[in-house]
Length: 210
Image (cartoon, rainbow, N blue to C red; front, side):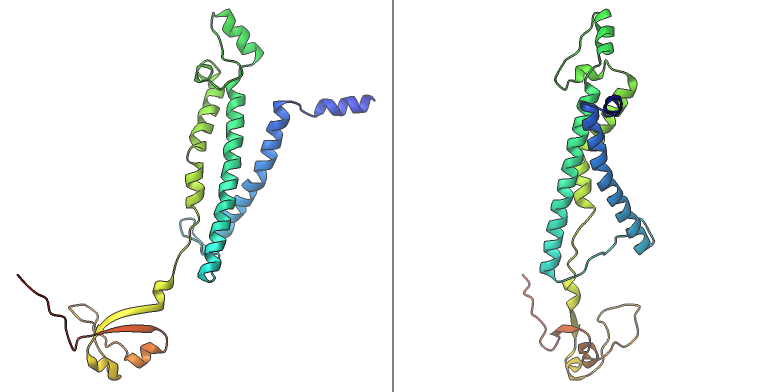
C-alpha cells in the first residue's frame, strides 16, 4: 500500500499531466522534422538548397503532394493547439499571484484568457506567453511553404527558329547577335534526344502598320 501511494505521488495530475502528454506527443514530430532536415542536408550538402526527394508521374506526384500537405496541416494544427494550451496555463494566475494582487488592491480574470492577466504576471511568464504567440501565428504558413511540387514537363520539348535547310539535315546557328559562335547540331541529332517544334522562316509573318 505504501509503495502504491508513493508511486501515485510521482504521477502528475491536472494540467501538469496534460502538459506532459503534450510535450510527449510533440517530441515525435520534432524528432521527425530534425531527421528530415538532416537527410536533406546530407543529400544536397547545403541547407539553403532544395531537396528533390520524390520523382514520379504527374498524377502520383500530385497525390503524394496533397497527402503530405494534409499531414503537415494536421501536424501544424496539433502544434497550434498545444501552444494554445500552454498559453492558457501561463495566463492563469496562481493562488500566490491572487493573494499578492489582492494585497495591492488589484484583481485577475479567472477561467478565461485575458490580456489583463498577462501584464500582471512575472516577466518569465510574459516572455514565454509572447514567444508562444509569435511562433503560433505563422506556423501554418511556414509549414505549408517548406514543401512544393515541381512540374518539369517543359523540358520535354523546345521551340526554335530555323531556316528550311534545318529540316533537310542541315546545320544552323542561333538567330540574332550573340557570343555563341559554334554551329549547332542538325535536326536528326536533336531528334535523338528531344522533340522539337520548328518555326520555319520560309514564309515569315507579315505585320500591318498604321
